[in-house]
Figure 1 (cartoon, rainbow, N blue to C red):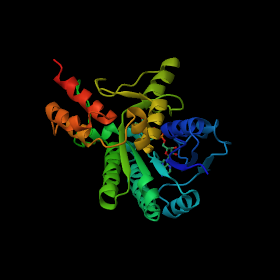
Figure 2: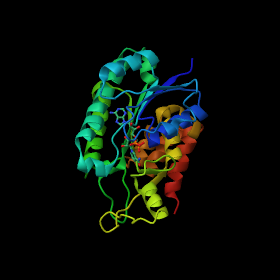
Figure 3: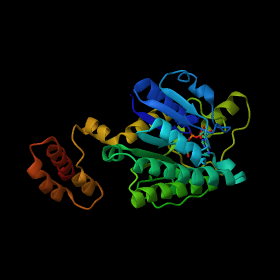
Length: 298
Ligand SMILES: NC(=O)c1ccc[n+]([C@@H]2O[C@H](COP(=O)([O-])OP(=O)(O)OC[C@H]3O[C@@H](n4cnc5c(N)ncnc54)[C@H](O)[C@@H]3O)[C@@H](O)[C@H]2O)c1
């Protein structure tokens, strides 16, 4: 039988793009766990709703008994966690639901996933993935220049980003404490079809079309980065199977400690070259040598 991916928040803007992508481009069975809040839009799933590989479970991620039932029935190979409260302005007006869903919901899901994962045979435990979808807003605001990296300190500025930052810390702790194979992604703002019109691009577009004012935060100097939602869906799918993805992209097995050490600045290009020499005949060695030589070029 086809492997199963469990998506939370699959009726939301990004989740629905991911569900549509997975049904159209892969052979996975897709289980969508979504409470269907105001942000859940079943129209965005109309094209897949009657597909044999698509299953909808209208469940709250804070409900551990229901989550346990879903894990037992569908036996997922991976979880892609997108369910959340996601609108900054709403979090300022009414933060409680953000703490409940983003923090308590993520905690509940991590715990149920961990218990399920711990019952799997070794091969199943090694292959399992929990992809926690977060936001770059956990890093605070950018000035006119620069960009966030994995090493940027957390500095959430709103109840929304604070609740997401907290959920990232939980996800990280479940990896370090229990070994649950967690991946955290911190993407920038998404845009594309089916976005709820409270978000910037659809709001501005509709207001402009209807001749209404175009509201701007502060002095309009905030810097934003934009990611097309279908590109994001593809990346999330790749994150859930990242070993196969790296093999596909680089045509080599995962053994990249030398590259990581170099890119993180622990070793310089000369040291990378020396480490690569014994592997000069295989694809990985050639790749590392090319990397070291690029740096040596004037
Ligand atoms: N939209 C963006 O630009 C953006 C950028 C970075 C990160 N993110 C993150 O990506 C994720 C998805 O974002 P989105 O824009 O698709 O959100 P969205 O608000 O469009 O959808 C969220 C979905 O989660 C569901 N949901 C809410 N509470 C739930 C609960 N307690 N149990 C089960 N389901 C629940 C809703 O019904 C909805 O379908 C969020 O976690 C968000 O923080 C979004």
